[in-house]
Structures are given as C-alpha cells and as structure tokens.
Length: 253
Image (cartoon, rainbow, N blue to C red; front, side, top):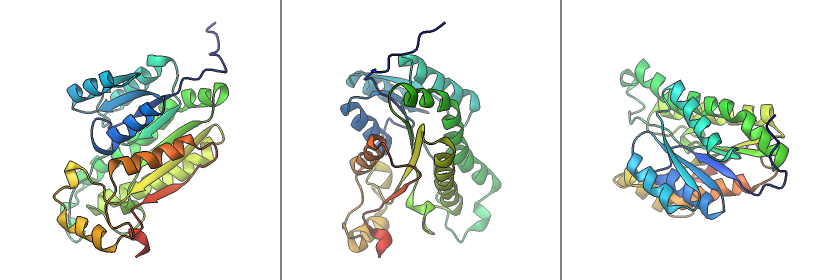
C-alpha cells in the first residue's frame, strides 16, 4: 500500500494553463516567487515554456491542446505525477473571436462550439480530473484552490463577441456552482479582468482610451495586477464562489 504523504508537507504545487505569455505567465511567475512548484502549459510555444521552466526554482512544462479530452487527461496526470500532488489549479487558457455584436451571421455554430469547448468545457473537465488530488491537498495540507480566469464581458454586456461573452458568463456561473459542490475541501473563485495590457491588446486604441478616460484608476490592468489578484484568492483560506471583477473600477462609471 502506498504510504500517505506527510501532513506537514510544505510543498505546494500549482498548474497554470496557458502560462507561457501574458496573464498566465505573470500568474506562473508570481506563484513561483511565492514558493510554489509550477506546472506550465501551452498549446504551442513549447520552447518558451521549457525556457520559463528552466528559469524557475521548481517547474515543469507540459504541452497540450485543451480542445482534446485526451490532452486534458494527460496534462493533469503529468502535473500530479511531477511532485505527487496538486494544490492549485488556475484555468487561465482561453480563446476569443472578434465579431461585432450586431453581426449575428458571423457568430456561427462552429464559433460557439469552439469557444464553449475551450472556455467552459475544458476548465470544468480539468477541475473534475484534478478533484481527487485537490481533495488530498485539503486532507494533508490545506484546502485545494481553483481560480478561473474569466472576463468583465461575462459580467457586463461587453466583449469581443457575443459567443465569447456568453462563454465567460457561463464560466462565472460554473465557478459558483463548483464552489457550492466542492467546498470546504476545494475553494473555487474567478478573476474577471477588464482590459489588460498585453501584446494582444496593444493596438486596441479605443479600449485603451476608454480606460484612460473613464476608469477610476485611469489605466488598463497589467498582467501583474491580475496575477496578484489570483495570488490573493489562492492565499485565502475562506473565500470561495467569488467573481473578482478587476477592471480598475470601469464598471462603476
């Protein structure tokens, strides 16, 4: 029989999906600096992932396409196998499609299915696959933690497209449902950023101007701003079912 891990085990392990650039990379680096062993992931960018892992004190990189169930299973299995445990799952990987909200014809069934599979089904499946390990975290160390990276588009009638916004709204509600279902052993929360300064958004001049003019903080978020919000939720022993709207106060205007 395999012996139980020691109750005073100080090691904490975090899997961060979509973590080779932007928000995901900032989250991975923030958790690494906080002492976590980190499992990095991306669909592509394998060289970047391996280089990031080499820079961190304790990290591995796993390449997987979350559109495929077999890849999701392999990702979680390899994450757990690396250190024999998993304490934190950050569902950061997601996709978007820019479609004007008035252009209903372009929001095809294929677009809906693609966004739903990556932004809703994959995070749910990863939680289900990691559930046993996260419950073990509660048993031997502290409650497991799941943080889903959502969007302000899931809270307000905004976003790159209607299918994208609806997928994030679904992710928010799933966050609350899982918090009820999995507590107290596993806490489940979400961070819902507004505009975040990344290479992807550098040319979104209209959005940048909106945040400068109307948001109380007068700027978009940096990836580190969102990473710090994630770290706060991970560090909590109590918060669950929360959707942390992180848009610099734009929602107040």
